Length: 270
Image (cartoon, rainbow, N blue to C red; front, side, top):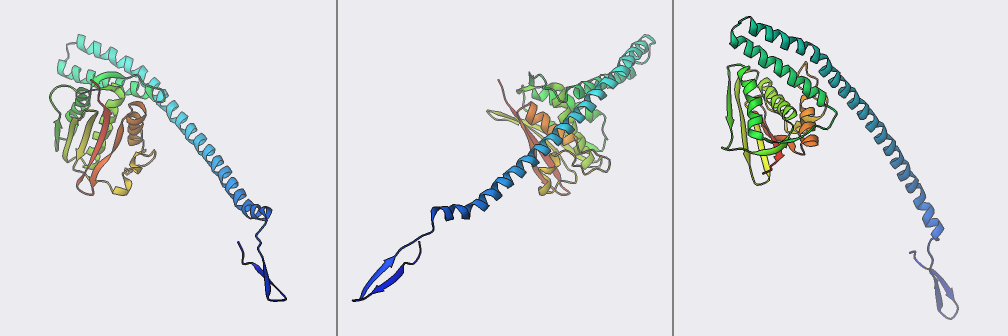
């Protein structure tokens, strides 16, 4: 470990003394580093506990607000259904009554969605094409005529385990975001295809696009590019797809001022 000490004796004799640090001294040199590491781990553990508690508290708050909103909407909905029944008896034009009834049922669907936040939803074997098409049709009918809508899917049915209300919420969120990104004018298309294991749902628009550095950030709670946005739509969509449906949602492609393609992957079942 060290250069030996030379000792010269008479008659041209030389001896060498070899030495090294003691084990105790070696250990003492490592103790400060060990203490620093233990302290760093301890601080990291405290930070993680504090962060997780804060996130859990926020989740409880949002869950409580969602369930309370669903509860509050339920009361006027019951009254509205009663008024619709009266309108039918008064021989009001069926076209108007049907449209009002559709929107009331729509409000009921929204209330049910909010009531499911924070609890594990039930999943059923459903046709992804049909459920996606229903959400698509509702928004197409009520959107600007300056937007060109396109829906493409294979013939037949593609099945996956879905919660229809929550999955429909995701599709509507993505389509609404696409419409906002295009400022109410452009081309929006929904493409559905599959391979042997996965169903792929792509929502494409010709809007303002997203910088590559923001591809993951847009799904985090609180992030929004809108002046009046809460930054919850995409984060809820991610939670619904990945936590509840065991799928994936991500930005597949986006170019600034050219458009965005967001893809959803779901397990395909027979």
